[in-house]
Length: 135
Image 1 (cartoon, one colour):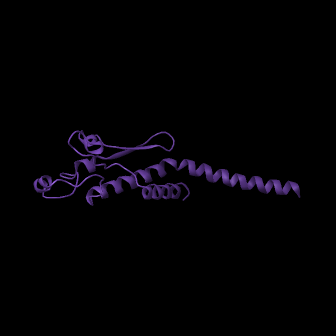
Image 2 (cartoon, rainbow, N blue to C red):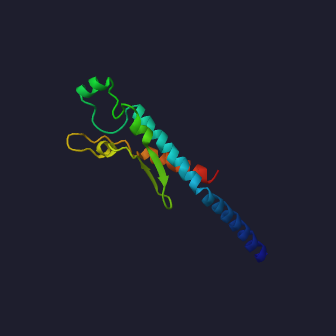
Image 3 (cartoon, helix red, strand yellow):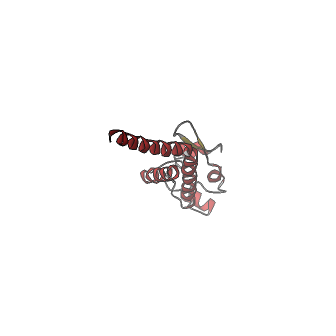
């Protein structure tokens, strides 16, 4: 009897080990799913004027003929990319030269963050990641 109970436990552990191994093999796929989701969310924020920071000045709105922050040609929004780093780290970035001025502010240009996460974003990305691992 005892041997059968131990064997059953070992088979159960083998199944768990197999599931964990399969999940680890899908880590890159899961990270890409999160990266793509955040790119999409960031682009939506640009389009719906949900980037952080103060509203545009009246003169800027008149010149642009729009009150949408950080969008003239959409170059900045379209330039955002992501890269998976070691482990579970990811980086979202842009190589547009003026991006840092808007993300962090500079002299008389106010900070208007466009690369950021909300708590709801992080909850959603955790679900996406886990779904991709254990599908």
